[in-house]
Image 1 (cartoon, rainbow, N blue to C red):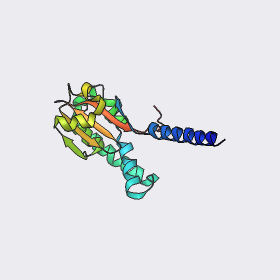
Image 2: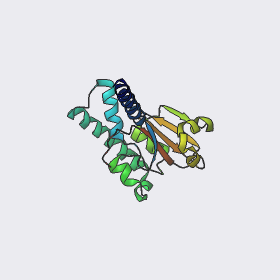
Image 3: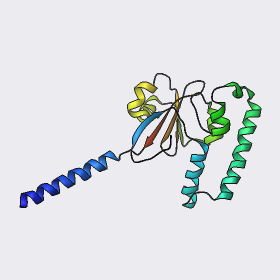
Image 4: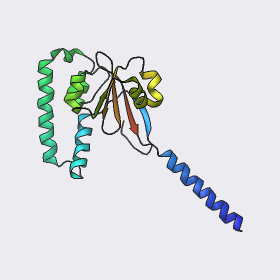
Length: 168
């Protein structure tokens, strides 16, 4: 009977360890980049411990509209590109986004690097695919790493928990 109890405890411990290992963040290579609203909400939680209020969100939307429209007035050529909708309506970084477009939407990165060794550590298992085109990496909150070539965004990575649910 003791062996049954011990084996049950061992099985439970193994199951618990497996569940914990399954919840480690995973680095995903994605074609959908971070959105300005996602970062705004994250900043609100970091500063206030809560989601933004209706009024705070309205003020932020007005400020974001102003920044986006100013950028579009200064860069009318963006309207004829495939990423126009992501920038103008979705306020989301897309492949091909220029560094200036990324800064308009997300602000300044936490870190910027052109060091191949650091970019390799940021890219982890995806580095072999990314390194052929990436010349610079920008690190943002929420686990985002945005890789650029000479013209714009070439790849985006995000660390996510397997327990995260997203509506894609």
